[in-house]
Amino acid sequence: MTESIEARRFPRMLFNGEIDLNDPNGDTDGSSVRASDLSAGGLRVYCLTALGTGRRVEMAFLQRNVRVHGITRHESPGPKFGWHVGIEFTEPQPELVEVIERLNGG
Image (cartoon, rainbow, N blue to C red; front, side, top):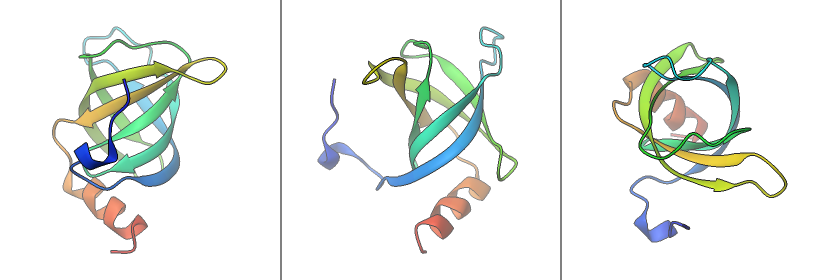
């Protein structure tokens, strides 16, 4: 499923960063994933395996020591292998919003 740009509540920006991804229920191993874009409402990450939509996750932004919670909203196969996964923040932290604004020139 593709998402139209008009449907986005927050503007996206490119973000090439490493994220630690954990399942609060212990169903994932705390693997590091690569984020490709970021907004105040969520981010897209690249994973080697599908996570399934509706899954609650906890993320740690390694460069900034910021932790946030989210829920997987969509996923699609990558161009050669792996999965692109869209994650919506369920409780964005003020520190993360500040980082996004700084990266966005605000």
